[in-house]
Image 1 (cartoon, helix red, strand yellow):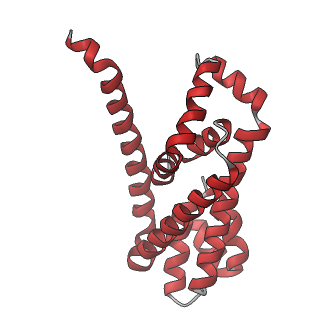
Image 2: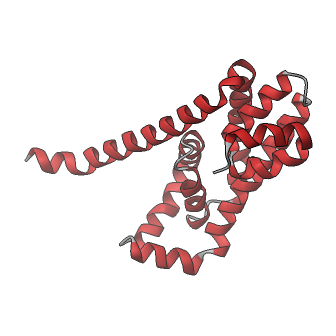
Amino acid sequence: MIDLTTIEPLIAQYGLLIIAPIALLEGPIITVISAWMAFGGLLDPLALYVVLVLADLAGDLAFYGLGRWGAARVAQRVMRLLGLREGHLRLLSRRFHHAGARTLAFGKLTHAAGGAVLLAAGMGRMALGRFLWINTALTLIKTALFMGLGYGMGNAYARIDQWISWASVGVVIAIGLALLWRLRGPRLCR
């Protein structure tokens, strides 16, 4: 993780040239900080929006590609370590075929699970065109929301970064508990 206090001077010195590579690593918080700086007149908001969206999409496509084409052997090893079998991959593939949009939306909303969901989309063989269409729409919305947050509260970016982290972890835990309850609940009641 990049130290938040170093991001602001880097953006002030290098502008949009530095935002794209940092956005690949620190998407939401770099969006908040750079939008706050655009509000202060240091950056062009429209150009910033385009750079942030393209950087986010490039990172997401890299995760998807790794899952789809680059990590078959690694993915199989990881699956074995986690106790997953080939049947699980077929279920995952069907999940992205029938509920890919919802699953990608979950990944976009929960920063903590985003990379895993994008890898899973690739491993599940979600059609690339569909992935790009849905992911682009979600990225446009997400980037606009975080830019709005930056315009309104950007000077509190350290606190916002904490909120993003805690909210993401909270959502993942809540969904995990709900799944556990759904899978184990009926057996516990007997």
